[in-house]
Length: 175
Image 1 (cartoon, helix red, strand yellow):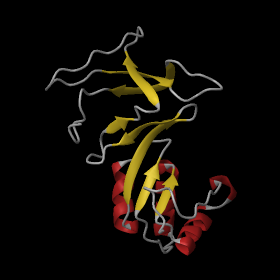
Image 2 (cartoon, one colour):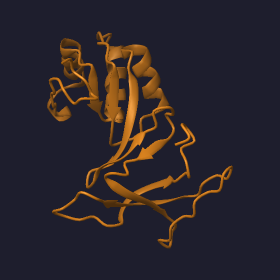
Image 3 (cartoon, one colour):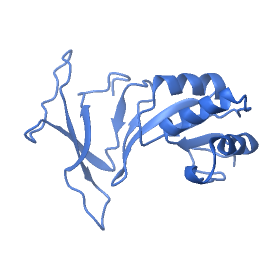
């Protein structure tokens, strides 16, 4: 079976970003030419700009899965132009893992990982922000997470420090 993100198959490699220079990472990517790459978007955009400035050859990559920081429109453009890759983002926190995944039809919206977490948006007094009515702009608030699979250290209504707005349905795909 060919390597597939869908099936979780194929060789996988973990690299510590602090042990290598940007140029060494780009050379590794070019040498191994992975189909899929999981990386922090902030670090990867800096590495791509460095590679372009140094005229390092870049491999084709099918898809880049980002985590840990916001995947910017700038990174998405560079990934598409320079690598031929789409960027799919997942919203994560170190304590709980993935909280939401990028909408398949929109770069601007995420779908909550409902099988893994309960995600709440609350106001400054800790009360749930009410759902927006159709056509209304949803209110933002602090993100609280209850992890459903943390057995050793349960997390209940953990404040991530982030802000978000919950839509009654995804504006990107309607689900």
